Image 1 (cartoon, rainbow, N blue to C red):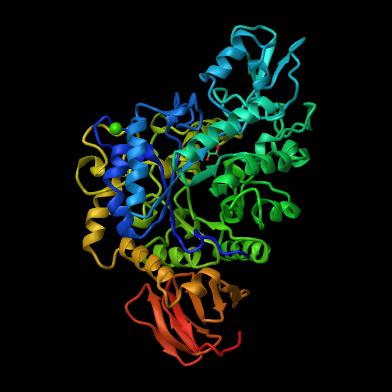
Image 2 (cartoon, helix red, strand yellow):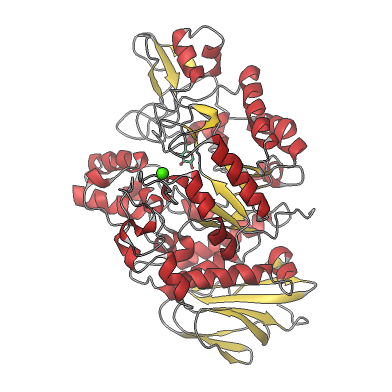
Length: 562
Ligand code: GLC
Ligand code: CA
């Protein structure tokens, strides 16, 4: 594998709306981000991914873009964006933006023109079909509920396709003119000095055509969109063209949001000359999910988590460099998902951080994760903003759950969990805003916040700093970045352990993923403790005694065999 400049970096996702509000309107913005760059630099992160800040009606919080060439005034101006690029450059940091091109907003001028003249040039930018006798072209269910077809405004018999929200019409990638428009836009941003993109929902750009039904899987008569994704062939033709016409000439860094790729396609996605530099590992994210709704999801156990991570590691080891996360803006907080209910503590949070951060690949931190931010309680459906939670609520009620049960599912799975304002301090509004925050602040901000955690050497925040520093330490970097990952004790219940092995050394990460203490064998005696989420390490030759949720990172003697 060719080495790339970004392999030894640490990436961080900013959800701009909830990060830092500079003008008191309750909405985070670009000047807010700029004012916090030093904090991020101090944490040790290098690559910053900004969720969308383009002009948008915010029907899906910016993932519905009405103008790709401008910044939404709520987030700032293009001058602010230029200043952010400049300030990041000064600090050797890299900015990447979200590239949302499966769909745009119904308020984009392309769509407005398509409504005016569906048979004209812009009509071909979308999927528009004439509907006779009320029979829609296909029975796919949109990701946010209901049919993927809606009436084209101004036309009684025409419908347009939207696999997400009805305010997110799908762009027709079969149309070469549309593709050229997209590539022009991508190049415009890269020419501006952007380092690359996180590529949204990209697998959806290829549809199985002509449109047709699949067997209905709920009483609504619709079917999961996954049927179509499974059948659709040829997304690679679009992705390869996009790479060649945009990313490659700019040497851009790209990370794909790819679900449902076909296993044999992995080298095409992230191998040498892949469509993307890297893509997220979602194996643990989607574990236990059900197409039938949140009420049928099953919890992920520590052993399941370990299997998911190791399976991905095995799959990609000779292919490329994966991106590792425990959460993002679409997911509940990782600490609430991967640590069994009732067992959450700072110690457990640090353990989880260590485990996902030191596997092979690029580690990503989602804003607030480094503070140990948690899911937020939901007391009424009125509090909920996330459109996917609102749909899931209906699905839960239709499945016979009580309102209280449906709310519990939102607490557990909803996207608002990750979107509550960043907790800067214990001041009102958590230091995020002097006004009224657009989404309620998690009541735990009085104890979980950056200002207080900076003062406490034992905080989750300081632990993340140590973790980042360890991965960058010249003494261990070669092994932690490029070393092979070899699972250790992979069949032992509630243990997650692995070595990282390179010519320069061998490092063991070993975690007791449960509350009870225990003694575990080591592959070789430890030479040095590199990181520990407890004060002491009870090493006993070829064994170690671990407290509940204790994790150790140990340098092993280099000639030891695993
Ligand atoms: C991606 C985004 C999500 C958005 C969807 C539609 O999954 O991460 O937030 O709702 O795409 O753009
Ligand atoms: Ca603001």
